[in-house]
Image (cartoon, rainbow, N blue to C red):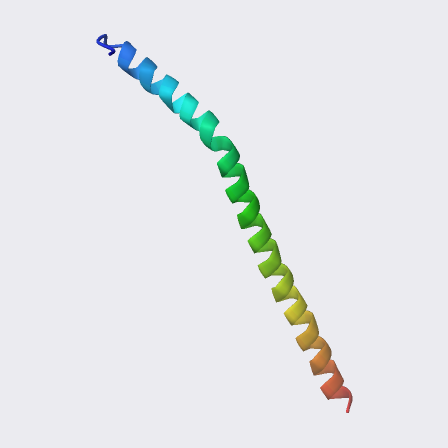
Length: 62
C-alpha cells in the first residue's frame, strides 16, 4: 500500500498504463467496426444518390 505523497500518483500512473495496454486491442476492434459501419452508410448513401439521379435523368428524357 503506498504511503508517500509521490507514491500514490506513481501507482495510479502504473495502473493506468497497464489498463491502457490491456484495453488497446479492444479499442482497435471497436474503431474498426465503427469505421466499417460508417463506410457502409456512406457507400449506401452515395449509391442511393447516384440511382436517384439516374432515375431522374431517365424520366426527363421521355
